[in-house]
Length: 293
Image (cartoon, rainbow, N blue to C red; front, side, top):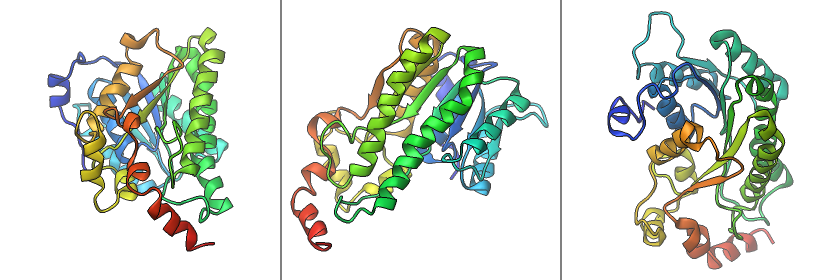
């Protein structure tokens, strides 16, 4: 895949170099497009990282590429890859946290970013498919944070969930992910209240239509870009860097009094409606459902 960011991110951004020096972040889904760029930004600003993924070699390759972004001593680990991990398996995530602490000594931040999504209406959606998305997104996010919490208590760290905007209103073809992400938002708010007295902050980031991402490729139709941009108030698709910038903010001292919130990064798109609602509803929806009924 290759890196998206480079040293120009440090030179041109609003963030000071070494903002996250001596800090450590663990990221599930860290080899995926959005979460990977979140990792790149953190590493460029001095953070060390563990990336956790299901695909072993992809995770290892991503870690090696991200490490090239910064100078470091020979043999020094900047990005620790832990592959072949299913976020639905709590024991595997506990192991990932243990390896992180053994390697870096502590843990300051966690990004729960592992997710699964596809286009499917509720008539064609099987019970197993619905369960799979909820298990990966919601249960996986819970397992990730649960495994990390003992270390976050020590560091008075911060949690960031990767959410979405598909549950802010009824979005056709997205009942499964809408339900899962609604649960994630609720979980984050609960953790902000329960873990706040321990010094831990919990927030969500909700990306909109982000160009050149795995999710974008799966969810977009033939005229998706053109139709979407028309309805985005800022008149452009999002970039992975937009998500990276918001991530840095939510982990930085600038957000020290921010917890229990959802940072929407979608150019205002959720106010005007999604491609699914504006273009596919109701004709394409009815066509899809009738094929099953």
